[in-house]
Length: 231
Image 1 (cartoon, rainbow, N blue to C red):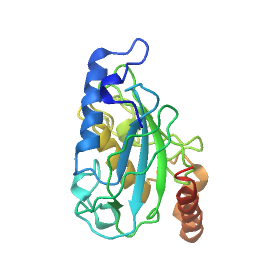
Image 2 (cartoon, rainbow, N blue to C red; image 1 turned 60 degrees about the horizontal axis):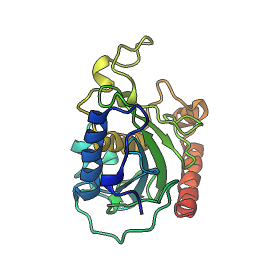
Image 3 (cartoon, one colour; image 1 turned 90 degrees about the horizontal axis):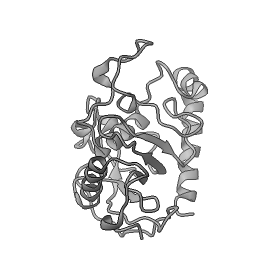
Image 4 (cartoon, rainbow, N blue to C red; image 1 turned 60 degrees about the vertical axis):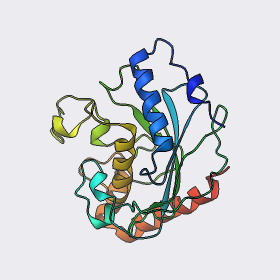
């Protein structure tokens, strides 16, 4: 199982205030029954390095949309807050594994339904003044995910003006964001790509010009994620 919260350590030179805040947020995400379809664990014993599992169910509902950062809460982006508990699986991490607190996620009518996506979130010592970095470990084909797996989304961009003019400072990171709001926004992003400045050029082109091929590629990622989720 993952390192107990009391044993979690800061990264070398890490901010004690950041570590305390992350410890509280980590504990909340493991115990909050309103957080659906998201499991969290520590990589090793560092509170600055989280392992994530996003499980996207096929059932339809739209009661979770209003909690998604930066979205309209539209039906296609929504998650169901009415959920049933599921057994806790034995996760795998690079340290002691994962201690998970989760229930089923439900996303309405999206290409990623059924996916089991693993990711890492690395928090800086300057958190929450500056954003963490999120990287998918599961191979993804998405306009807003680099080939390296790194997520490209506005709220993970530093709190400064965009020199390219694609997004306002208000759309970028602010200290009010939390690991929960990050993950809910990423789930919304997965079902509603932004192709204005894609991180994955090929995925962006297919999303705009060839939805059939795009769907084929994404559904393959979903099938592969199901097969590799517990490897």
